[in-house]
Length: 147
Image (cartoon, rainbow, N blue to C red; front, side, top):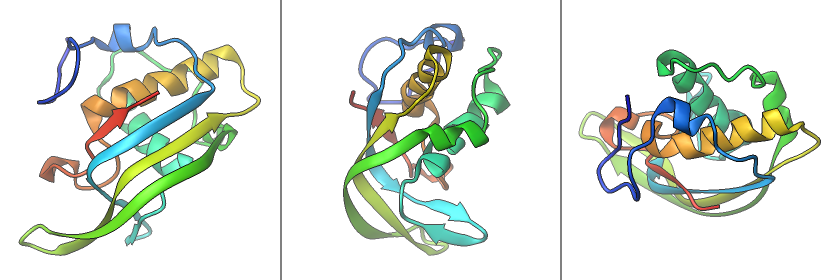
């Protein structure tokens, strides 16, 4: 079953189609709505590979009928954050204010086999469907894969 968020470019893609994404060594993700991460009960505003791709991987495992066997949280250490352009903002969700970021981050997949690189690219493509980080049900964490 393919689903597409509002405003997404291109046709919706199924999980099986997403799983065939070509491997990519460099990935750029743009956080188009305020994005925040929860870690040990605190808000964390640095888009580390473990927080970003871990968020996508947890959602993939919860909902996708297709397994990504080459990925684990431990293997996400092969992804490097190499460049960011972020703006820090506060978001008022009526129930609470949350610190957040918008902007983009560039990641590089180092020393990994093609299966791992392909599945990381799959998660980057999936980001447009699942969002990134915390409070995605409030519209936070909308993410676009630029390259």
